[in-house]
Image (cartoon, rainbow, N blue to C red; front, side, top):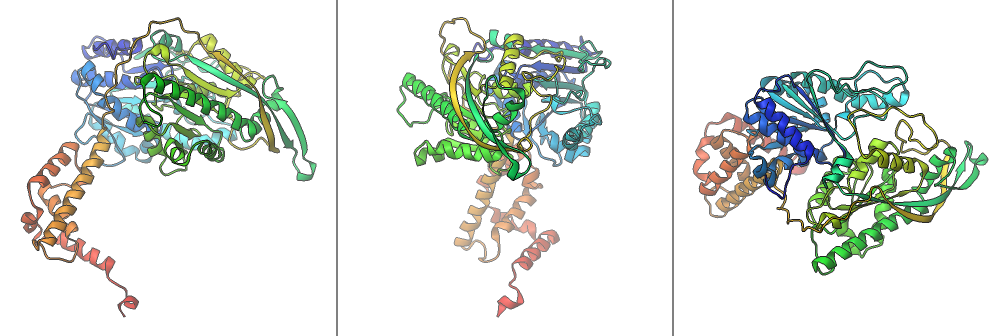
Length: 617
């Protein structure tokens, strides 16, 4: 094991467990539940398990299911990380797969999403039945036991979450081994989580996981453990108090002005409308400004420490994540941030990623993997599972006060950045409205220091406790925001850290290219090679001009390789590119002689491009 990449205690525990399973000493274990505090490094656990169990022949492949498409690339990177390949001694690779045949393409497994499994359950079930599978169920709390919803609000979410659960249940049963991952072993709606064993229900008690159930092994890793092992950073909170005013009432003529009411110390009946108003008016701009300037100070200090000139892109300077309450607010926040920068810098440094944007996943990838952009504005896409260690500041401009949700958001800033110097010089900074709901969340986190494998009993809702379900994006009934302003900012550290000797962090290797990206790059290079040969052959009269020579050469390559490029494995794509670099497609054009299928495709193309009767005159 290299000194620069040590295993954490939960990772070592899992490695010991799967090694025992590989030797047949823990043959009774069929399910592993890893309850890891958000940001504690659970993405390495599937790599550890697969490396041991595939090498021992206990399983043939790994299938990793994640809740969102943006997390598939991170799963690929976990297997491709060269430092962990060396440390764990594995050569496994997985690819981000869509619902196409042969999702592994010759690799050791694939990564897919709950949505994809729900869209094509038969495909994934057939794969699990045909191969001894280690099924990794990531963020398993997204899967409720279906059919237990009674409220109208819960019925709305049942359509998606219930579809996921119904598709995943047969897959879980078909898998040889299951690894459940979560940083939050409870659901805001109080429902049980699919695939986990529970104690019999008791009146007045929240569902409690049976950690002693037969066949189940539980691995826990709390925030306190993660802090002690320096796996996560300590957090400082910047709590901004303010006051807000709004209109309230059903009819326009009957609406009355309410407020100003304080965020901190306000009554429960005014907390929700005051927060709703504050996040959409002047208070939000003030909190955004505090977060923006704190990020600038961090980046300026780190530049000075590294001797970097202003404007030079570099990793490890620190980034800002802004979590907005809705998409309209996210757009306003983005425009505000860009207005505080020169034009070219604004275009380069600020990105927005919301579910309605076509390039949202590209924006997330750039924010994670490149020195710039340095600011990302989102609503919910990036709150859970986003592996962006350079995030140093979070602007928590969100109305949600569910503890699991807030813990996940907080964890975006607590990851240790290998590019940012010594651990002792790093710290997460979270700016948030100073309302009693957030204050209670902080108090609970300080007291308990992270998640446990036994969920907490559901508290009675009061003015100081979170509501049992998320607040929605829509306004509270009859509320029209008017104005708000900030009153005062106070800082507090979640958990003081003891003084530690300074230690320089080694430079991290460049991020590896995941298989799906390499496949796309190879296909693009093959397309470019074919187009180049077609242009060269037409120019030198090796082939007759006119028609679509590139289409003909595509068909020639397909006859040579015996396979469409979309269905090729990485090795096959590399072989096809190597063949193209050594051969001319014109020398193999005879392979299309008498090919009725190719002739039909040519006629179809000509038919599509023939001018109509009116155009011919």
